[in-house]
Length: 357
Image 1 (cartoon, helix red, strand yellow):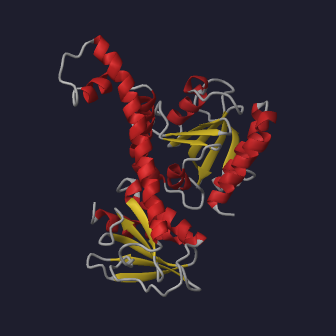
Image 2 (cartoon, one colour; image 1 turned 90 degrees about the vertical axis):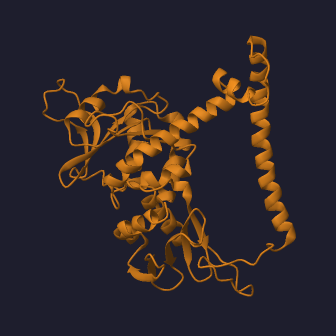
Image 3 (cartoon, one colour; image 1 turned 60 degrees about the horizontal axis):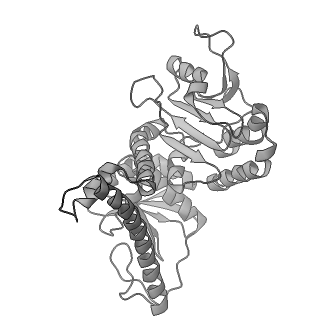
């Protein structure tokens, strides 16, 4: 079962069992432990990997414990505090998680009620858990953009350095998205005035502010609607035309053979792309990394530009190969035993990204 399949399988458990999980223990057993085991890949029955009811002799409150500690090589890497499904997630009610984070070696703190998962680190002050999570996951509304970062926390490819490097950008991007959503729903006075002064040059009094507050909301809604419609029209017109206006090209700029069979992206190629994208996210925003499936190979590009190749996936034969390109764009193929071995070449991929950023 792939990482994505396991994630959706646990999400199905939330949908199916959610109303019946009326206690914290039931939530742990039905959802949280399966998430730790199947999604993150840790053996919940091995106390050297997952230690339940973790207690540290650190002079904290007597009897205080954290629900789960994830260990690697005998060191605590991640602390997980569990709540009952449906409970709100607030650090005000998770003091033991905050205190243990401060006194242990953990760099990742997790607060979850089974459906919602909040991941914290110490971006603002060393060894002090941030008040805001850098990553949030809702199993009933999975955001695909967080999956590459979540995957870095799995046992098989645990990469704490990459997580920390990407955490700050991910934290602020998530915050900005929430701020933009709030502005679309209720434009602030500052935004209303900023936009109004672009089209209205008279005295800006309270009556005008009220008028433009309504008009701003209307204009923003219409703007989004028009952009969506433009995309739909463009897609439909492309389908109606039966063929693109220009001949398709391979990622190296060579025209494709129009008589060749239609390209079909495999699950291995999709998984490989997500891994490359996750690695590249430590250097550039993840949405700058694009895929382009060709007949002969699967290309990963920066900015959807075939002059900025990051790497190539040769997964169409019996063996898997990763194509790494130097500054002259000369390709060297390295054999992979499995798709996850791409992580072994993370630095070469980052170096390729740095050449174009």
